[in-house]
Image 1 (cartoon, rainbow, N blue to C red):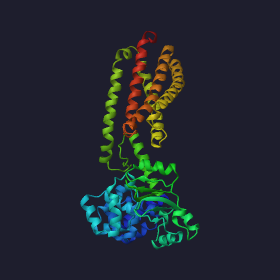
Image 2 (cartoon, rainbow, N blue to C red; image 1 turned 45 degrees about the horizontal axis):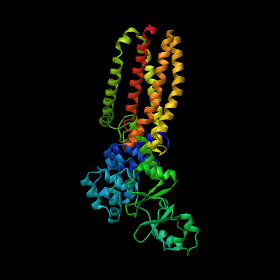
Image 3 (cartoon, helix red, strand yellow; image 1 turned 120 degrees about the vertical axis):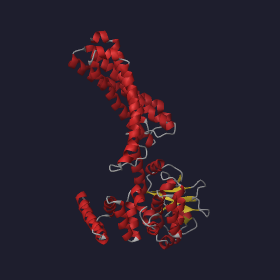
Image 4 (spheres, helix red, strand yellow; image 1 turned 60 degrees about the vertical axis):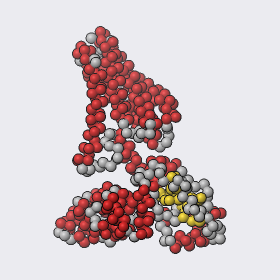
Length: 453
């Protein structure tokens, strides 16, 4: 829907709420698409959001709460009465309800669980035992498992009697009497099979599953690699405990991509900052990394200070030194982005380190020669000093080689140390290219100083 339409609707909602006409505000919100409705609701003050949700039927309030961002949903949930919150949670998918409860205080969580229906609480409580960013934290317990000795007809009748949600049943999982995952059968295969055929005869035993403790990034990789619409989750003994559906994958990919981008940009590791996040939160996440960058900047400044006498004799060096360091930083960032993506997608790991280093070093040579030659010619034509062009060209070549090696080596090393390769790679690589660029250029200038002057 057009942003102008959403904004106009929001104006009507705000006016109605200011006049105390909550019913009119709800009617205005209901003219929007459900996703736009959640976006509009999130733009209201938290007290207004709670007031609107309090007046909605629990099922409608649950739909809105599910469409909100996790942080927004938790904030508005805290403002609902415990009784209202429990009614809304009862109408939510178990995994969505667990996400909301997991962001509440322990006291409020226990109080809400105590007032939820026993059936819903029984589905939600196991999910709270897993961290948010694991398979257990992402899975839903809303699935129906078949038994191997059922006939196709019995399985269809079982699903019909359970009022199965079609979204959760592209794949149907088969368990033994101990609830251990032993097979999978497609809904299409079940429908076209002979009604008397046993599930055991039509199921596939080649079923892909992952443990509940697996990180969400690995989950996305498995689902993408095997082109799955859903992924069964098992515990340490192989019992089927949940399912992750394809729509959950979109959230995982968005969360992981945001996290990596933020880490590469040094604005915090959680990936939860937004354009309109509170200023205090924004500064708290960004300022520490600026202090770290300041330390690395002092290191680069110290390298330059070692050549103060050279710069004093030929001030033009100050003009060109930033070109060498800047190009090195850009080349390092290019390599870094490619390597972090490759690591995230499983295309490369530490076993390929030497091959990756040699490849990036060779790329650095080729790019260094090309850029170095262009800068050398430009410096010569600009200042009319041939040796200056040679010095800056050589420095550029070596710095781009260093950028390629650092851009490959740093994230691979961090991954080998079980750290996020995006966490501090940018700071380290930039420091390397700055120090190598400044130091090498000014060192060569010192050697050739008599010819430069």
